Image 1 (spheres, rainbow, N blue to C red):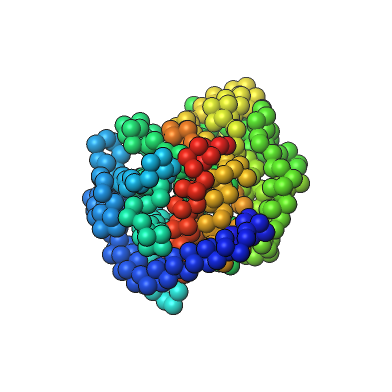
Image 2: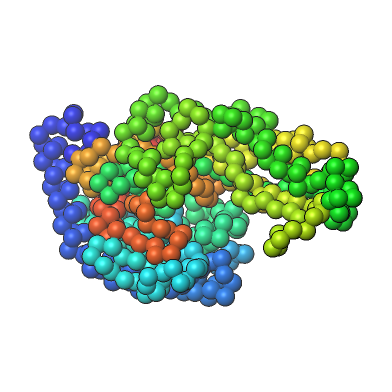
Length: 488
């Protein structure tokens, strides 16, 4: 049985649980080929949102999923193309049960660029199945995960004998996530009448290993900027002027060197003021997540680990804020030497944020930090890439979280579901703010799925597990009820 319910269930509950698990699994097993056939079709559409020449394909991808949702049984399906955003898909299937909870599932149908193409072993838009592994761009991120939801709702209906889901089910499938969701806030505002729900389920994350069920309990936010230092109005001869005028390249290197102390802590004023620290319980559960630092270094092709002192690698990449230099330059970059004091230098910085950190406050702190490290004779300019993305956090132990982990556990034959954190950033916090309800993550990517790299893949058995978990989740949410699901 699901791990959280195993110790308290009676014999009749155990029998009913086993019957439900068997019915769901039998349906998924009987319809595996349908999922694969549909995925094969959808993956052939190169919907790369970052490339304008592919925007017609993004539209085709939206139309394809809209048709698939209709075939599944969703009575309301719309392609949302009435704004500056690339086409998104909205689908709705209302429960016939009065007072049933409403669930909004979020994912995206656009995909990453495929460059460098010569590193792919197969055509990125010709899906290739090799045993239990399917390779294609979008196989894991995010088309495969969205399609397991369509199979999952059918399995839910078959196992329960229902004609409508036990919850009112809504799907919001974005078309710009892989290009930074530049118009997502506009999309949410324009269609806020569609967003009413009791809980949000994000399907764009993963688990730690094929045999270790887990769920993401937080995603980091982010702000990013380019800092430009201008010194003399032209490059100067370093023999004539060196040592007598400020050098912007030297100044920006010193600023970057001051960004962290010797314990790996970010020195931006107020950076840690609002950080939500990991609880003892969370750290204990994190410690149960299988983690091999040597393997991590191998995957990263790094010869050492580095980061904030006092935290494990998993904690550093998921639950702690960071500051990183993404690029730095200035002056002569060609072969040999050109002995100048450059007039300009720059550094590109990004800051990953955790729960409760306000991007606006971090931006203000970084501006102050830059000002404090700009010497006389240097003019500094900080160009921010938008207003930033907030982090989101899923508290452990809420009714929504317990229902989610029970559903995942059922798909994994009663195994304990561990919490983890996602180090990346996305639009989830904006969705949580727009809906005002709790958010949970149901995703089955693997760490080695190469989701933004050549040779992206997905584990086909995990797609089936995802369908099973989704089928159990709708019944679980219905049992919890709308009011309890909203508890934080």
